[in-house]
Image (cartoon, rainbow, N blue to C red):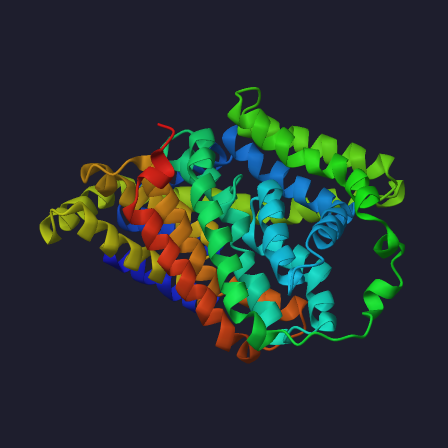
Amino acid sequence: MVLIVIILLLLLMIGVPIGLTFALSALIGGEIFNIPSASFASLSNQAVSSFALLAIPLFILAGQIMSQGSIISQLIDLSEKLLKKVYGSLGYVTVLASAFLGAITGSSVATVSAIGSSIGQKMVERGYDRGYTASLIAAAGLLGVFIPPSIPLILYGATVGVSIADLFIASIVPGICFVIAYLILHKVLLKRVYHPTNSIPTSEAVKPEATDSLGKTFVKSIPALFMPFIVLGGIYSGIFTPTEAAAVACLYGLVLAIVTKKLPIKKVFQPFKLAAISSAAILGIIAFSNLFNYMITLEQIPQMITELAIDITDNKYVFIFIMIVILFIVGMFMETNAAVLLMAVLLAPAAITFDINPIHFGIILVTTIEIGLLTPPLAANVFVSAKVNNCSVMEMIPNTWKFLLISVVVLFIVAYVPFLTTWFL
């Protein structure tokens, strides 16, 4: 089995697509361990035929509809007017808008892309350092996963067999902790990175919405504000399952965008096209990773890891620390969804042995891997934010590490205070 893991890592290092890497590793392992290859097609199909996983493409579609239909822009305008008298308000707006968008899309990279294109240039025009702007947006993008719904949490729930609705509830308080931490850090760094300019930003001078009063802007935003209440309220009240809530969000967003004429009929298929591309990539990884997971389960690798962990320590808190270090390293090298699918299968049995609630374990696992989006060599949030904000990665480093550090601090608080995730159980 060590040989298969080495092959997996080598394929990832030379840039083979993640889904294909899992498939090749599983096929090679099948030959080595005499696992019938005829069963691989059905295993892949079963992996993506789950009703729970249907929520992934639907939430992605809801996010695309919000972006293409200018719904996000309405919410950003409202946030700006509410905080216009606050010094450095646009930075606070960025964090809050990222949290709000995360409550719809469940995707970190999608949040970075949407917020960066909506607010990034505006922050620079207002006097923020470009490197800091990109760093703030990259870090705030993590809220796309920390704030429910979360695509990695859906994957974890479907893989381990725990309630996705319970995972969403469990992530609320940790998500709020991350929001507060980023807001505090922004306030601390503000005077060093913000140099207000008296010039009127070009991008705002041409926007008629900028002349609207707060009351008029709020009225315009009311339909958009209802979306997260419909999604999360429906899930937590038991009216919808997460998958049904995602479908309702798509329908509501589409009707709203068309009625308000923010999404012309001739462009109505654009969100579907973009969502289909993203969804196909994620579901492909899920299908092929299931082959690999099936193989390691047959070889009893999770049981071996559990025994090894018990041999190393019998202390639950030491195990949590070791687990965080391992997951952090994995998050540095693997795409988030693939890492969640792999590590959930490997580590969940050991966590249960140490009497760690699987809900709490899921939050720790997803949060730790997600922070890897700020760390090289993968650092997807960093690279996407740099591209969207027309900034070099080197310009981002002086501030990105600060957001990384405070993210790790919050992670350990969440990991060692289980009540933050299990208060509702």
